Image 1 (tube, rainbow, N blue to C red):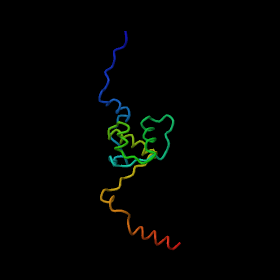
Image 2: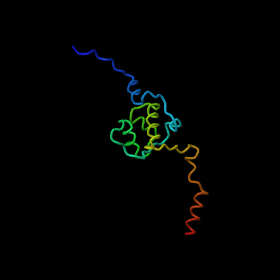
Image 3: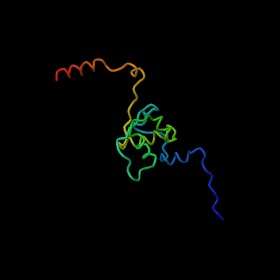
Image 4: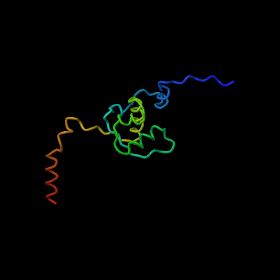
Amino acid sequence: MSAPRRPTDPSGLERYYVLTGGRSGPGGSASTLDVATLVVSRAAPLPGMQHEHEEILRRCREPLSVAELGAHLHLPFNILAVLLSDLLQAGRVEARDPIPAHDAGRGPDLALLEEVLSGLERL
């Protein structure tokens, strides 16, 4: 006789518990993450790393928003935020705030451009 089969968890909660080591939310600097935050890798994956951490580092070679990353990895925001917290604390990724909507359409800062032009003219 074979051993009785254990019922599977269709919600994925067991998997998420294992991925995060039982943590339900990020700590430290990752607590300010939002779906528009851009994440970029600062290091290559190491042998033996957790698969999801490796995937984050691979996918974020170019800046990628937390929302896009979650869609690629099929992970809810809070689970992804915990994983990103690990990588942020280890210095393996950098989180960048997105350009605020009120600044996005304004264009470059004219005063800064004038200073740069003035400096170039002095060369």
